[in-house]
Length: 175
Image 1 (spheres, rainbow, N blue to C red):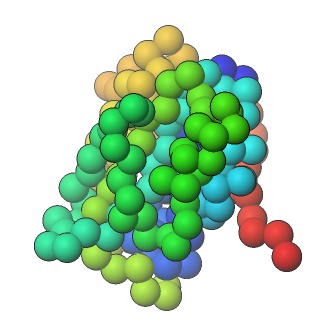
Image 2 (cartoon, rainbow, N blue to C red; image 1 turned 180 degrees about the horizontal axis):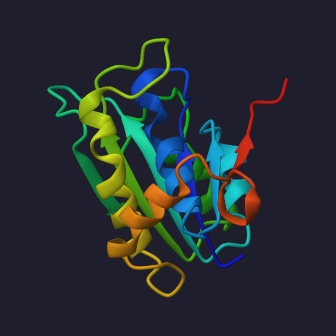
């Protein structure tokens, strides 16, 4: 595996499901994608062996603009306002200490408004899934179809299986 997209979030916490939604859309285009709950050790396991890693996560911001996203790469600052208690910032810090950071790490942090219990993204966050997916796919120009093809593929694949007939892997919290 040379690249992976990791959608961080909990689909049962409304807008916190934006990472998994993008991971599913990316997987439909043929790029390896996984879904993670954001645990630092499991994030490191998910990106193990990948040279290029793109993470999509929900962030809580003061005066948030739901659906607005931020893109950052290391060594720049990692967003510290994840919607999880521990997550991406701690995973990056731990990976640095253990010399297990990917060669290239890109983080998309999506501002969210509602992380209450329930399913379904709010309209403002749902509206950015397609353009955010196109931006994530642009990180892998050699492995994906063009962004122009994304809309056609999405319509054709509606209700279909994910890339290679299986959904992105989901890393669950283990007891």
